[in-house]
Length: 271
Image 1 (cartoon, rainbow, N blue to C red):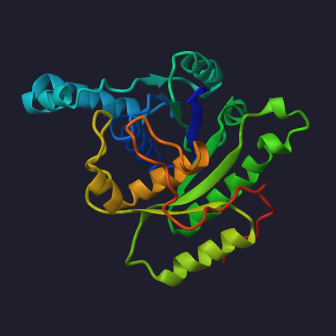
Image 2: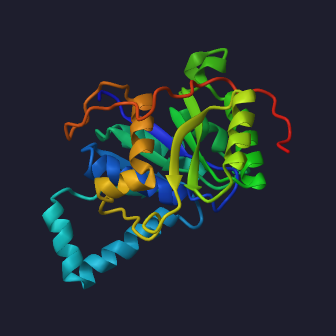
């Protein structure tokens, strides 16, 4: 790819699994699909992703099996940078000069942060993980309405924003949850023209326990968790179907269609 794709994972509510999904996506893109990836961790003050990396580097020093696995993989770990939201635009500018294919941004779990509007205009795509509880659904829908005003297509001067699209997706999907619950929420999103991906990342053993900044889950586990479908759906949006990844995989829609991006509409309360 000629220019890096800048993608953010964002929520208006903490605890939605934003940092975990960022790590899974980054590691699969780098270690399975062969892309050059960087993460910018703007989730101050916890900087969870940087903490994950530090913990793993300690294991590299103390556990020979872990360090041997890294050597055998033969792919250098992708860099993880830390930045405040206020300085994130400059940090992204610097990363864009370093030849990465993807820059993944982990944003704070709140919108009440100085500098966030500039960050939202800087990225090209925003993905919002959500679960089937009333608070998360309401906050996600509200956030998407805010994002609609940041779209490149909504600006008087298109150069004022890079944002091309925003998409919610099911994270930590629970199959035992009543189907009617998910159907009702999906109907609500469709009614309000809020883009919702078809992929569902399931809450199974391995989703959180096996996250790693140094290794990807095996492709079989990515598929089992729904992460493989999410990655393909994201790549179809960001890179385009029919394109080939550096590792030689053809990017294909995992479903018949993908919900098109539309400007957010006024939302009613989900009952």
